[in-house]
Image 1 (cartoon, rainbow, N blue to C red):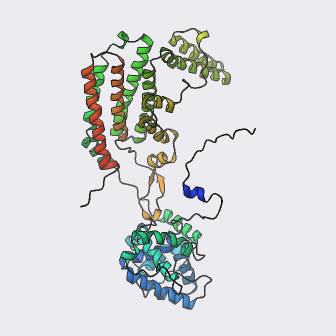
Image 2: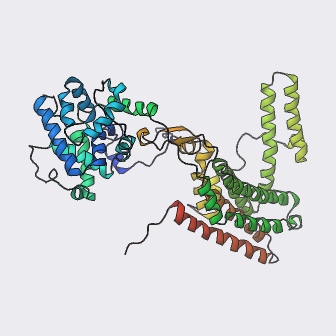
Length: 502
């Protein structure tokens, strides 16, 4: 019997499209629009200042002129790299371009990229950054209107003289070309008809982007501090926090020792304090624009919340004891590791003191303390959450969703430590973020406040008395109002709802 194949750590849910082509590796070639975008930049720039019909007509004039004059392996379809190559060999092609509306684009492109193109400028020009910026901006999205029009102009010209049984190459107006169904058709037609053409020079395009990174300025995103502060005030986070502080203070007056065994009471008070205090820290970090730290503390608070609820639900004195004893055993483990690696007496004495202090603090004998190398409990965090709230619960979802900030995944690094240049000539380039303010929005605060409130309610219910019904009512009301306010924030700023059309 063959051994069971070990399951790898990387797990993906692949799309049906990906699975369909598994038996045919290499059949579907990757196609990047940004890798080819500079090839249609001149057309995009022309469409910025002239209407579609004018640009399309002048495109045909120039393409016909070149195809009549130069015999190419693949029919000339007026992409930028091929055009620059031919202009350097025959300047009459540039003369022809300068008789059309597309001259404005080349009068900006040739001077700006003269060093890269190795092209000597012998005509007068006035720098116009607006045309160049808009030329890029309008086609960064390969499905934008201008991108589709640029692609279709090339496709339509390339199909001249060929059969068109389905009428795909005879659309004349922008309204017809930009119909949703036709946009999808253009997107699917462009890669095989033009995008993979040998006239396209991907290396040329790479040089263009690299040149832009060096010669065109970084444009960082404006600071959002004022907007975030306005949202903080509008959503009444400060008022909710003050109300929670008052109820938390009222909760702390309860004598937990009168209800629970001493060490259980201490653990429960520890959970209450950690969840509540860290929640207040999260609110402060959000207010101070320390977004990444707010997310990190939220993730930590959430893990404590899940474990604490599980222990309260189990009501097992052995589990509470295990929770406390584990820390002592963990200190013994690390102390022994330091002893093993210590190369001087001072470090060894420090390691021994770490172990003895931990055992002394726990109030147990040395022989009763096991070395802890694994986890506290047999259950994983997801199993604890499922036991308390059921399968597919929101708390474990939030726990997994926030794992990126704990492990430093790319999304978090890009969000907090890099800044995307808003210069369209940089194609979304990330660079060092020099802004000391980091924004996570209000979500960490909106998640922590009701979570801390909910745990206070859980602890009050575990007391088994109706003495604190009024406090429970106040906490429940606060939790409900915070969630309602969050939905307002979500619908307005996180996932804005589109206005209904009549």
